[in-house]
Every structure is written in C-alpha cells, then in structure tokens.
Length: 301
Length: 256
Image (cartoon, rainbow over all chains, first blue to last red; front, side):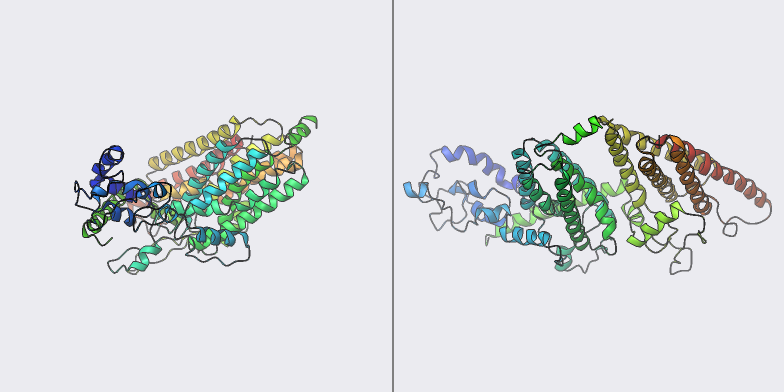
C-alpha cells in the first residue's frame, strides 16, 4: 500500500497535466527531442526533482521527458544528444538508479534469503521492515518455472493458492499477534517505523506477511528443481518434500514470531503455515515426471 | 529535492494518504470489533495443548469458572484472556479445527478413491452451513430466554466450534483403525459416542457459567426470586437440550 499511495497522491496533484503532456510532447517539436532550450511552459515545479523524491513510483524513467517542466532553469536540463547518448543509459542529472526507484534491493534480498536458509539463525525483528515483494515474486516464478520444466503448467494454481493462502494467513496471524500500543500525542518517529499498523492493529501488515511467506518458500523451490530430474512420486520424493515443508514451516514460523512480536506461540503459528506449504508440496509431488504412479496404485489396489 | 514546491507536494500527498487510511480504518472498525476478536486469539502453546486435552477428557477437571480481573475501581472487570485462564474460550482452536476438518475429510475421500475437486467446496459448505445454523439457533434461544450480552455471542460461537476437535478425532481414528470403511462399524461408532459424550460434558460444565447467571449478582430477593427460579429451570433445560441433542445431531451430520 505504501508503494501505491504516493503514485495516486501524485497524479492528481498536477501531474495530470504532465501525464497528458508525457505522451504527446515526447514526439512533438518541443524541447524534448534534443533541443536544449529550456522553454518554460510549466516552470512551476520540478518534475525531475519530484521523480527523485518518490522512489518506487516508477515514473522516474520517463518523467523528466519534457524538460519544459523542469524547475531547474539554470542548466540545460535535457538529455544529451547525439548517437552515443541515444543508445546509452544516461538519464537526467540526479536521477536515482532504476533498481533503487523500483525498491529492489539485492543486498536485502540476499540477506533475507540467507536468513531463511540458515535454520539456526536468530531472526531480528526489524528484518521485514522494508517488506519488499520482489524476492517473493521471484521465488514464486521460479517455482512455477521448475514445475513447467517437469511437465505440468500450474501457474494458475500457484497464483490462486498463494493469494488465498496469504490473505487468510495474514488475517489469522495478525489477529494472533499482540495489539499495538495505542498512539498517544507523544509519538516519536521511532514508533512510527515500528507500528505502521494494519487494520487488525498489529505490526504485521499484509505486504510483510506476503513477503515472509514468499521468502520461506525457498526450500520448496529447491525441491521442485530436484523434481525436474528425479520423479518425486516415490519415497525419495516424499521424504525430500516433507523435509522441505518442515524447513519452510520452521523458518517462516520463526520469522512470523519475530516480526509479529508473538511470544510462546510458535507451534500455533506453525500449524496453519504447515497447511499452506503442504499445498505447495502436493503441487510439487504430483507435478514431477512419473506422476500418476499414485493414482495407478490406488486404482489397482 | 530542495525545491520547496516539491516539498509541499510531498506533504499534501502524505496527508491525503493518511486521511484515506483513517477513513478506511474507521469504517472497517464499525463492522468488525477487532479488539474483542483479538482477545480470543491471544493464546499460547501450553493453553492450546491443555485445552485440547480438556475437550477430549473433561471428566476430572475441577474448577470450571472463568477468572476475572477486577478493574481498578473495584467493579467486575474483564475476563482473563485465554493465555492466562484455561477455562476461557478461544477462537484459535475452533477455526483451526474447522479448516483441518475440511482438509482431512477431503484427504480421506481422496485416499478412498472418491476424490473430485468439487468435494473440497462441498465439505466446506456443509461444515459452514452447520456452523451458521447452530449460531442462528443459539441466538434465537438466547433471545427467547432473554440472555443478552454483546460478547456472549462470540463466546457461544467459540464453544460451538470445539466439537470439530471431537469430529476430527473420530474420523481420523476410524479411518486408521477401520481400514477405509469410515465411521460405519463398531469401532467408528464407539469412538463417536465417546467424543460426543466428552464434548457434551465439556459444554455443560463450561456453559453453566455463561447461560445461568450467578444468583448473588442477580436481582433482589422476594417476588422476583420465583421468576428467577422459573427462568433458571428453563435455562437449565435449554442448556441440557443444547449440549446433548443438538450436538448429537450436528456431530452425526459432520462425521458421516
């Protein structure tokens, strides 16, 4: 939600004119196509500076296109011209890099992945404060791709189970987490970062829940990658998938207890998470090569 | 970033977002009483284990009354949350038992070879319908007996969900011991009878304090005492019927 609102708040504020401006003026004989004359159609606010002020809005790449609306009048403020610059990746001055604007932070993703993979790690309660969804989406797509390589196309089921499961798990886990302390007037900024508050008065917001669930899917992703080569329908597959589910549940229950500040509830948290990951495990077992052995056995027995 | 107009735009956007957030929050809290719900989910590992044991073996448990915490001005305060009081009803066990029942029923049907994808929805709908009918019946009964209390209906919903624990045990054990023939046969029915009786006793003991108010904290003596007596009798009958007959019907429906 925090990613969306700056966009919506920004667009009625004056960038509707800019949005209308964006597409036509890119191709008009305006100052865009390389002319560096700072014509002052809209000299009021700096679109370039506004773009860098909203990381993650995603407008940044094309937003400074009409330099007519740049507030920085002193410099030429436009793109560099010439063939080399046309095929280069330079943008306007002071533009943040694309990954930073999109909110994709590879350091954090790596750190959280390593936390999941290490079952003995102590989990810091602020690990999920940035609640990014880029890592989890990557893992879900990887899971679907590995299943695709083993012959079954289950992307729809993955999306459906992930959405349904994360919504219901978020509801029940945020109901289980202790309520936030009620806000008083003497609220300093530290508490603002701590309890951004969902509808259920908890530190678990929906992006955070979805983020934890996605990161902890990693052991199942690895198991499904093994399922490309080895049929998972036999005892080896059952053992591996069960071990992966236990690992997923262990790490996600630890993370939820840390992020949601829950004490003495780890087993209770683990139970619905186990049900959720068993769903994915079933998808992995019955998708790999050699699927159908179980059905044949049941029919024959 | 040093542009003051951009700063102002930033502020406007932020306050718009906060206003929208507060609006949604207010309207949401009007329909769902979040803090009351949170009280029911405030459970701990040991509570859940002990409570599950209690639902299945309620015979020897001694004090069944819920403990209260006195508020600072001496009046009767709030009930203790489930974390601190074994007798307090919670919603975690009923919700989890409900979901587990649906999944287990579907799994057993799959193992029996009678699985089709609609079965999941069918089982869920049946169980949900049973819960809804029971809650409606309870509400109607409370209205007739003039037991009116806001949070009590949530208590009764919680108590009505405990029978799923017994049903899960019944169908699981009868599947394991019966070898695929379900709850037909001697073993299945004896387990069913046992869990039914355990659940009925559990409900009788627990609901005594919910449906029958204490005499001392009630109305004055004298003429109104007989009214209270008649009402007490009616309520006791209602409790008895509810714990035995109603539960029997519903448990049988769900464990077929």
